[in-house]
Image (cartoon, rainbow, N blue to C red):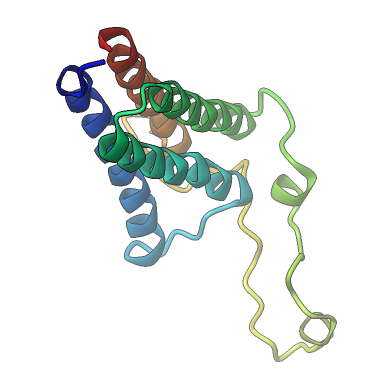
Length: 156
C-alpha cells in the first residue's frame, strides 16, 4: 500500500474529529453549555478516531483506516440516536432524560443551602444552527468523516 495515496484522507478525517472535539469543548468551557450523557458519549469515538489517525499516519497500517471509519460511524450513530431523543421520536436513557442526580452527595441533596446544578437533559436542545442541533451536526459530519476513512481504504 502506498501511504501517500491514503494519507490526505486519513489526515483530513483525523483533523475533522479533532475539530469536532475541540468544538464540543469550546461549547462546554467557553460557551457554558454543559454536556448531557449522550453528548459525552459522542466524544469518545472522536477521541479514538484521532488516536487511530495518528497511529495510521505513523505506521501506514491499512486496517486502521477501517477502524477509523468504524469510530466515525459509532459517533454518528450515537448522534443520530441523540437527535431522535431530542425530537421525541423515542425515549432517551433514564439517566439522561429523566433528570439524574448521579454524582451528587446525599449531604448536598439534603442541604438547602448547597448549590446543586440541575442535571443536563438529553431531550433538550441546547444549541442549533439552521434547525439542526449539535447532535445532528455531529451525526452528519461524522458520516462524512467515515466516508473519508473509507475513501482512503479504497485508495489503498
